[in-house]
Amino acid sequence: MHFIVNSGYFLKNLQTVSGASGTNAVIPVLEDFLFELKGNNLRISASDLEIMMRIDIEVSQAGDDGRICIPSKTLIDILKNLPSQPIHFVVSHEENRVFIRCDSGKYEIMIHNADDFPKEPEQADVSSFNIAAISLIEAINQTHFATSNDTLRPAMTGVYFQLEHNDQGATLNLVATDAHRLICTSLKGLSHQLNEGFIVPKKGLLQIRNATPAEDVQIEIAFNQNYVFVTYNTLHMSCRLIDARFPDYKAVIPKDNPYELLVNRTDLISVLRRLSAIVSKGNNQVAFDIVGNALTLNAQDIDFNAKGEEKMTCQYNGEDMKIAFNIRFMIESLSNLEGAEVILELSTPSRAGILKPTEKQENKEVIMLMMPLMVGV
Image 1: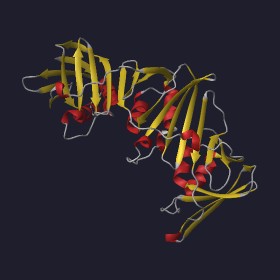
Image 2: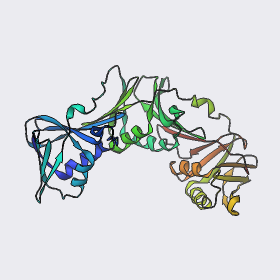
Image 3: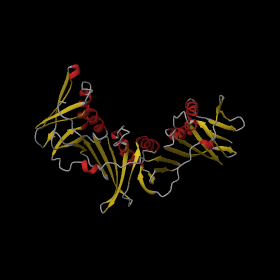
Image 4: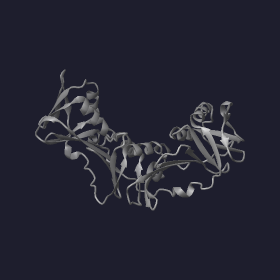
């Protein structure tokens, strides 16, 4: 088994799938790439048992089809420090090694048995739909940060993909919550007839985001009871789904928040970041004191006898109110919204507030629900 490939081109494709590699010393083969050579086609796979990614690339002067496993970190570290050039791979099963030759030298790496590498899950009994890669990436960016790290509530450690089809058309909702905040990004104008849902783990979701191009090209997403499969050109990914029931998120989104606070998004982020320097680390609380069209933000750290206060202009159409939120959650949410201004919909200091961008996007809606904190606690 041998082939020649350009080092820069090879490295780029290895890095595309490397995020799926495991770091499990108990199963060393999970730290490897699986190479499967057939003619001039080289299939590269990586897996951590939960996620598997593979990509097909073209190589030259190939001979003797075969399968081997090569340690991923070692190979990438060598290629990252090589200038772009043709490199020659020659496998010796007798010596259990792969020999890598380049312009300036040669390397030898131990290989592992390809039969020990995990098998790819079968794509059986699937439902599928297509979506623009750029739309999916933007939706992932606007939701993944709100997932929970609480393994006792597994449904909240991933993002819920809810497919809906009705008289108004086809929609995909991406929903994430950690019980303190809830993000829902709705992508409309799709062409499917599905009313189903599945939960993708955060790690798998980020691999989907990192591996797909941020372009207006269509990718296929298929799923069954256990796995989601993502396909784009020669790149294919499978990820085990979270087997849990996602909370009824629509029931917790307020339908009657009559008061609207309109404020400049970037200015509010800047104020919150300054106040975060002295906020209490115990509760991360920042208070919004709204009187007419004046917004005063307060933070304090009792343990270190520190206080901060800043005033901002705003537009507000409700009763004067003082309400508190988690400052870290608020900064994260505002940073992942788009547009110059945002609206914070409010009702009472004890009910959830809803962040929305003022600029409407075609076929897209983002809702960020923020649970309030008890003022002064």
